[in-house]
Image (tube, rainbow, N blue to C red; front, top):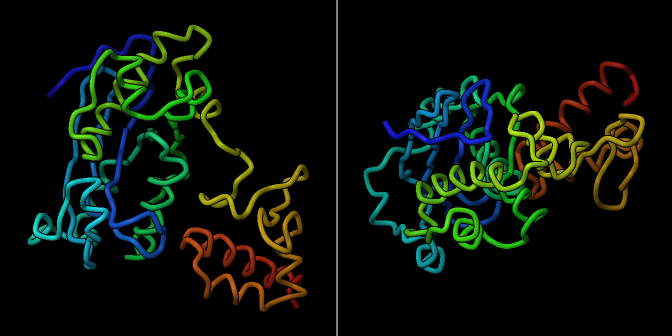
Length: 266
């Protein structure tokens, strides 16, 4: 088991750096072809979980050229349904970290888990997006970040495991480099959060200054979700039938059911 010198990083519980390789970028349509997680524990020891997955749909040739995973490489591999319990166990009682993960990997993973009726409970997990630190301090990409902070070249770029390991190393070096960054996950979660008012992972539903859930897009932007569904029920139907992430649909359904129970939708 590999050990990392944590430097200024202070962990109260494990921090899982994870990365996905997928058939494309469309949440809700594309599928995961590789999962990689690097669990950094408070004592500096590391546990890894890396697995290629059978997506159930063809991997487009242009995507395979990017991450190097072809249809033949996932033949006989487990499906996400089969592998999901290991992901859930790996994430249990841990905080999460990744590179651009708040915008892509986390929403993608949660949506895929909902697709197979697995509710990945991240209620108490804080998220640290290492890319956000990099962009706030030294705007560039993952290869440049590893070269800048660690003096190393990223080998096997777009391999989920290589990306997750690189992200772990970068965070440790970022904390060594910037004395104003606190090494605890609470601070890093707040520092890297793209929008702490988001209700769903995609940022389609947000909270206004009064804490009310409002639309963050479209013709009803800024208006109460519950009130809109009350006067325009077809908007809920449109969203449920549209190309929205499953997590967004889960959130608006909960709001609609709450409104129905309170009588605001009658």
